[in-house]
Length: 179
Image (cartoon, rainbow, N blue to C red; front, side, top):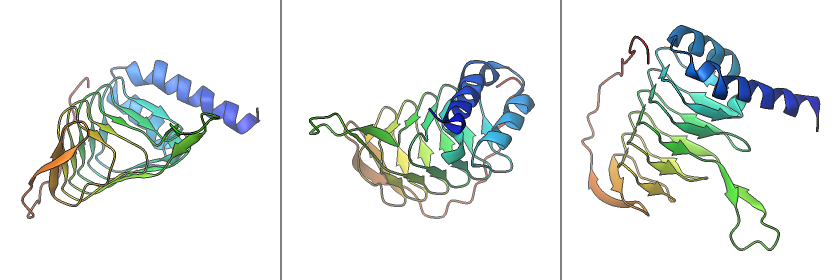
């Protein structure tokens, strides 16, 4: 195993099992600014979030990543716009396995989430998916296909159930004292 890969694993372990559980927001964010591919101004990551290969994870400005989320950038990047709210225990995956492969080969792709998207509680975003600007992914949804801008999806598998208003102007600002 090469030295760079091993170093990345040690850094991920340090954050995921130690630093990510320290109830001092500024310390966690200092670590994430140095480790992630991008960490936008005003973005907040709460306790207990896990990141796999932080170098391929890019968070825009003023995002809220709630407690217990998993962002998996092992093989492909995750690119998240600005003012995105990611609910507790959501999972964003970029890598899995090909169910038809006789050798259990890896299969995956980049995940892109547009500005003002809202990923609700325990939603799962599968590899290769794009979530459009202003889209909403309902609680517990399993998203295996792209979600167009401003559409609302829910269920497993996720299906369109509505449309969100187009004139979104909010800027997220959530910074709990110990979260």
